[in-house]
Amino acid sequence: MKVRPYVTYFHSSRSISDLANGDICVAMGWSGDVLQAADRAAEADNGVTVEYVIPDEGAGLWFDMIAIPKDAKNPEEAHIFLNYLLRPDVIANITDYVAYANPNKTATPLVDGEIRENSGIYPTDEAKERLFVFEVLPSKVNRQINRMFTKLTSGQ
Image 1 (cartoon, rainbow, N blue to C red):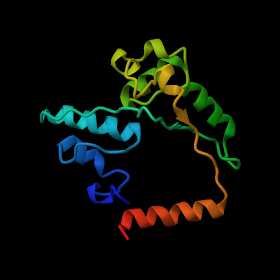
Image 2: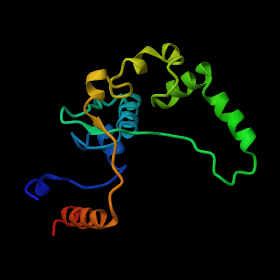
Image 3: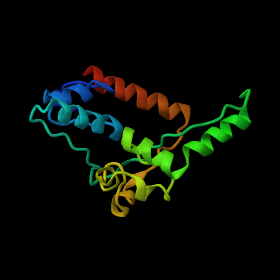
């Protein structure tokens, strides 16, 4: 609550445009959102530089995934599609387009060097040591966290 007066807002995606426009100078957000803001700022050529950094204290590990629903009507075709997506040449092109890391190590050399060398997309081994997986917490604990977060965001 001590820092609350210095927080402009709490929002999960508004910071994308505000970072890109230079309306805010720092945000806590997902790597993809911050990298999207960086791309928008570069496209606008507005003198704003946006960079994603994993805090020294660590951060939650992020995952993007595709799943086949249990009751899918065409699971065989879904597997064929997933296998296609994970082909090194295909997933490397997707990574180049969306700037999200992919799980196919064979594809890594095919990824654009600027993306491949970006430690916000492909964290260093040192950074990986500071990443953690969010735990599934008991409902009682989640309720308490939600109450505290609501108190923080409302300033009450």
